[in-house]
Image 1 (cartoon, protein in one colour):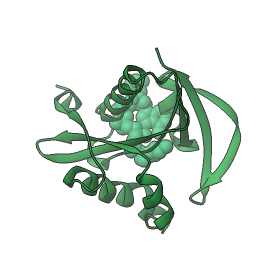
Image 2 (cartoon, rainbow, N blue to C red):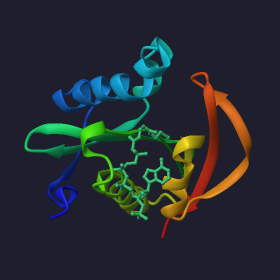
Image 3 (cartoon, protein in one colour):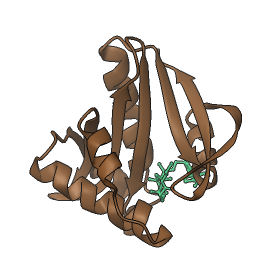
Image 4 (cartoon, protein in one colour):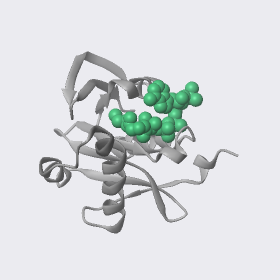
Length: 149
Ligand SMILES: CC(C)(COP(=O)(O)OP(=O)(O)OC[C@H]1O[C@@H](n2cnc3c(N)ncnc32)[C@H](O)[C@@H]1OP(=O)(O)O)[C@@H](O)C(=O)NCCC(=O)NCCS
């Protein structure tokens, strides 16, 4: 059985137990391999974001966050799934959840800032690349967009 199907997604309010676990996961997966830490700038950005956690048996196994850019557009970033649970649809579950959350709240467009190495994941979920690469956190990124139903 696909273990990812048992995972539930929860909102993780800033400062909550889930948020703190998501932050640890982000640091471990997205920053430490680059020799970086979560910066003060990112923590300030976090205060303007809605955070989500994928939880399995009480453990945070994935996370993603959204920031409204205007009344119709959301910005998605900080997507990470714990290494032991990749390729079990947890990332797909998170993306579907936040797209539904955004559409239900009246947003019409999702913009993702994605690492080039993860671009294929977003393409599989209907995102379209816009423009060339740019550098964030020392590595190449691309901007991808998707209209929300
Ligand atoms: C990218 C990431 C979030 C994907 O999550 P995941 O739970 O492993 O992905 P899923 O199991 O939901 O995969 C869904 C589909 O996307 C594909 N996919 C997953 N990661 C991919 C990648 N990096 N490149 C291309 N395709 C990818 C899977 O093969 C699968 O394809 P299928 O539908 O043909 O079977 C996860 O691998 C991760 O955390 N990676 C390290 C951190 C990272 O790069 N984060 C993204 C920052 S923008």
